[in-house]
Image (tube, rainbow over all chains, first blue to last red; front, side, top):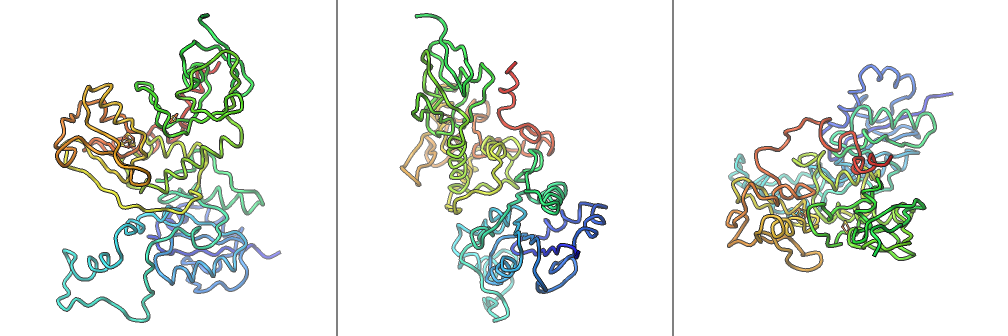
Amino acid sequence: MSKPRVATTSLAGCFGCHMSLLDIDDRILQLIDLVEFDRSPVDDIKHISQRCAIGLVEGGCCNEENVHVLEEFRANCDVLISFGDCATMGGIPAMRNNIPLEECIDEAYRSGPTVYNPQGIVPDDPEIPLLLDKVYPAHEVVKIDYCLPGCPPSADTLWAALTALLSGQPIELPYELLKYD
Amino acid sequence: MSDSVTITIDGRNIEARPGQTILEAADAAGIYIPRLCSHPDLKPIGSCRVCTVVVDGRPQAACVKPVMDGMVVQNSTPELLQHRRNIVDMMFVEGNHFCMFCEKSGNCELQAMAYRFGITAPQYPFQFPEKEVDASHPDILLDHNRCIMCARCVRASQELDGKNVFQSIGRGFARKIGVNGERALGDTDMAATDKAADICPVGCIVRKRVGFEKPIGQRLYDTRPIGSDIEEVRA
Ligand code: SF4
Ligand code: FES
């Protein structure tokens, strides 16, 4: 029997959650015995190649590309997990959510204290994904099956969740492994 | 009047003193009823409704409802657990609770309540309201982003400190904690020694320069759910 496939991605996150995944240390050897990685920053595969058992989403949606990737994951993963505070609650990127978008862009490109931009140019190349009005947690964009909060969720949290799913159990985190920080 | 009454909580018989609230009687018997606005040093106001129990078929706030002989109280039915979870979820989406950089994280009663209830993400859409930070006081920070309107600070300032530093102002979604000063907290007679400085269940009123003192793993709710101290009383 072929191994279950796992896809992972980082949307509006900082890759800290993926670092935490690597932080399972030598259990990573067990993990690659148990699963096959599909699209993931770990192997740099750019699109999901076939149906996946588990999708892991770090980060919420701050631009239209994030939404497209998240939709690709939802369409191709049996169980979709959002992990980290950004994916589950918006996190640090969502701190812009009560500031009008125009003010954010102004601060970043025109008037911020370290900005040198005498012509006041704001990047608008069509290659650059359009920003959304707000940053949305993953579950406000597509259906998410499990949320694993934490900034980042600890390696033990991720290991507990993955091993539960891979052995056909629902994810039930013990008290110490459910944290928001 | 006899000096003891009997009530049942989730089918268990409890001895209580007349004049006690259901919450106090439950605490003494080692039964934890979740609560946020209630504090042992303050008069209860029954505002957050996290302590809702069903008394003889009707929902009541356990922190204000006095015991009466023969009362039948339900505390942990699936409906009540869901009701409490809904309230905590609403508190999370109606404020801006960024636990990852909050000084109160690990010692926060709202966060601890969510942990105890096993909440992995709120079920309601986040509002991300615009709120102010008042850093005008030299020793105390007031960050409205984190306020859950429990009014503990209002009561502590009046009842314990003999002052009137905080008030609840406005209505509905716009309701907020106001300060009795020209502009901000720094203009009030709030002192670092005030009881109101340490009464906030969340990270809204915090002392400056002591944040993150305790390392992760040693904070109040890192390994023990909120209410464990009360449940341990139970023989
Ligand atoms: S500032 Fe703190 S104590 Fe005062 S109402 Fe808000 S949450 Fe309660
Ligand atoms: S604790 Fe009873 S209403 Fe808040």
